[in-house]
Length: 231
Image (cartoon, rainbow, N blue to C red; front, side, top):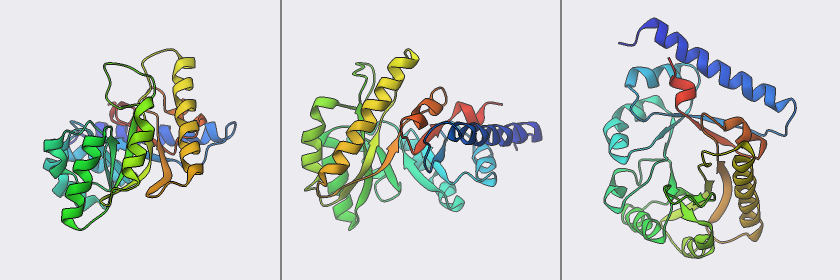
């Protein structure tokens, strides 16, 4: 059982995030924003406090942890996203169970997701994770391969691409903003092309250390772990 002081701290953290977003909106063009609680390594009790305080979007990094928590996740009524790297042999844990898979980063994974979804008779909503910073130690699709993946997605019957996701580099504020701005520009450009099966609705950028910068550049989902669960 989570101690009352810990429950109170999580509630205070969520309130602070909402306040920070509302304050930013006074000086920047911030649209409708969804705050995601990132649940990696978090207990059911901790997640429950988020739900009690109005969080309706949960994101899990690890496919196996997603599988293990799924029974509880489904009782929350929350929208569930898989946000971590996905290997072919873990696709079975999340297709048809996650509302959105945010980490499609290769044609191989796209094909695996689509094939499994077709066998289940569903269409799986996905985001393309783009490695805009070009960091070798991070997952995500290289920018130069994006057009080819979009072309494959446009004819994949088991998936629907709903937008883009990126992780900013651990770098200077100006470099982080450059990555967010470039991702937003790609998001807008792809939407304007009106490609079959591609619906640019979700721009998932920003984590605990940079979510306000991401919102300044058009993100409509911010993925917060430490900022919410710091107790």
